[in-house]
Image (cartoon, rainbow, N blue to C red; front, side):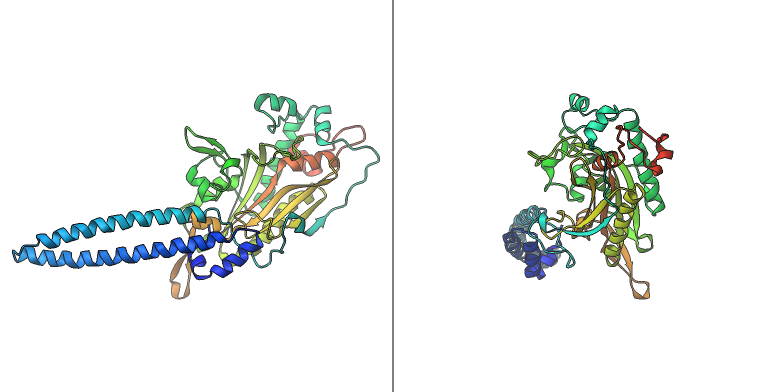
Length: 424
């Protein structure tokens, strides 16, 4: 969430940044009005508390002198009741402001290209050569069915659409891909973690996933637990409510998990095979760092995600998202897209985002910044996340890229030691 002080002290800046994101800026005026009233309540409450403290001292002196303090005591009971009412009023203002603040996105960094829609995203980088086939390519669904490695029909029978079933060498290839990515990111300095798949409401709120995106989450009402949409949620909460040491930063984690998304707004979109699923596998990258280092760390994280695709020899590109398309919590975001030969289009396989202190403010992840003369100051860390990578659409590109004329799949060389076979 944003800092209320920033809105209070620089409302025009906040409004200008939100306009770049096509956001309704009237909410800022609502917050300012509520905040003004809130500060007024605090001022009145503090005045009454000061009066109560002063008169309480007078009452003590009167009692000591055997004087009748009943009238003052009665007055102070009324003052205490007024303070209690003001405290309740203050809590109401705090709650109202908090509700509004939770739906305001992060402010875009100055380097983010301006745009009114995803059509204004900028191609940042392209890698590899687009293959030419001397035969009609099959899509990943056809390949999976013919080779008996993917079974979307039975997955649908078991759980409903969007829940894939991997079989035989398909399951082994998926596992190989995950292990390969974890090993590579370990070499890049990320510490591997295995985190819970179900998290509390507090954890989901800390990651800024609810209330904004609550309808996209799978929720278990009886236990008030949520299935994670990404390991970002559970990894981020490792350091919730903690104060880290400056010398520990950056702290870099990678973790493989299943991810679950209801995709409530996906009606009418292409849902064939892996193109849009409710359950998928992903290796997530998370970086907790000092604010002044976060954009350099973001570029490194982008290289680490892209490095996976280059070792797999997959044709890909990087898109720098414009102001209207960056994610809710992000100040800057890159999407990494792989090419589908059967669909004849780019498919998003990863995104790398710098969320600055937007999530750490809610999660209260801080660090002791070392100042001159060994003094310290507690500040919020910056948090970055990136997919390193999601396997579903990556598998689409991998299968289609490496298919042969006779319908087999040549396993990329870097995966062979993990898979235990060269061809499917």
